[in-house]
Image 1 (tube, rainbow, N blue to C red):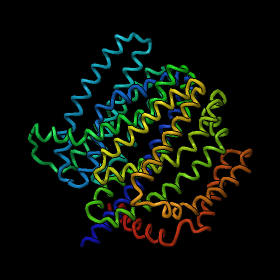
Image 2 (image 1 turned 180 degrees about the vertical axis):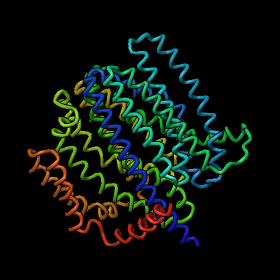
Image 3 (image 1 turned 90 degrees about the vertical axis):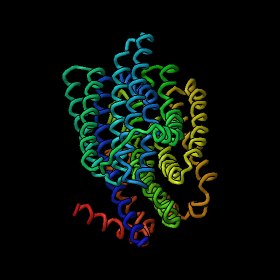
Image 4 (image 1 turned 60 degrees about the vertical axis):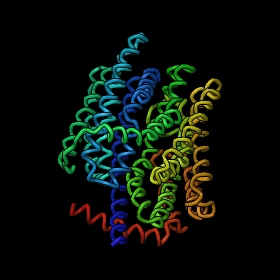
Length: 487
């Protein structure tokens, strides 16, 4: 019976991983497309203002997020019947914190007397509303109902790009774009709430302050992780704004947007990975370790060709997406492209620690690298401008990867196991790199698709995808596909 439950959990893990990857790919593709349209309409200067407003808004929204999404994915995955009580308790706390944060920010901006104060306020409102959409989606992930998240995310993405493009063509600029984003996110939140009210197990909920305080206390390490992640990933935009100006921020933001879109592939996998690993940790250590190693290997298989493409084809990609005015962003893309492997692995390592209830350890490690990132930005940006911000990300992600896999997770993934897992994919990526380098002067899409075909062929020919892997995938995906078709 236990083995049957593990097989069903594995099937749901693969099913939800595939769905969440699809969600992220489609949603982020639309998001990147919309960002490219904004960049072409506004130019590097206004794009820098947009990036600064977004980075500032992401910082303001941290108390409102408070790590609730990760807490929900871990706890509700273990007790799905608690969906209703967690939603009302955490939702009320989140709503109260959001109103207080927005009021304080609006007052601060008015006292600051910036010329772009309306843009900053709209950016914060949008980010707050969007965080409520993420909050609702976390319940779908915890209950392994990724198809419901798909509906909400796609609704937002489509509405956002359609309204945003329409408002830009109508002649409105940043204020118009942010206003349509607020409307799109608000409508998506309402849709998510409607769906959740239909699928959640309804239970009578009584307000008990003791329960609410326990939820808050449990979420504190996750909130600390969010703050540290902000300083690790986004503080460069703020520092760059004050040290180098809005044009440099525009070049950096154009590249960072592509990088962020690619790193959401592992984020999607981890959305299914955390609930599954959280369950395995209390049920079967063997399944826990096997799933970790399998995921680690295939995150590398996914990231390796992306590194080759973003480093060797950076010039044609930037020119194709943003046109010649953004050519200075080419070296930035090459630097951030090399970071992708670290970033993919860091998502997995951090999630494993959370699944083991070691979020306090995650918090300490992330704050360590956050301090390194802030220091690196202050040291490198004055001399290298936006390229210094890129190198700061490279250093931060590399150090975090070393900390995770050398000091925190060697029990599950030693160096010998690590090398065995990636040896053949590394060779396949090297063969792909040769092919892409030889074709780099040809049309972008010829080099891109040829390189991917060479990588896939080399991976199969070298045995990078083993018979055991294929058998494992077939045993999991086939039943999951039947589940989807019978839905």
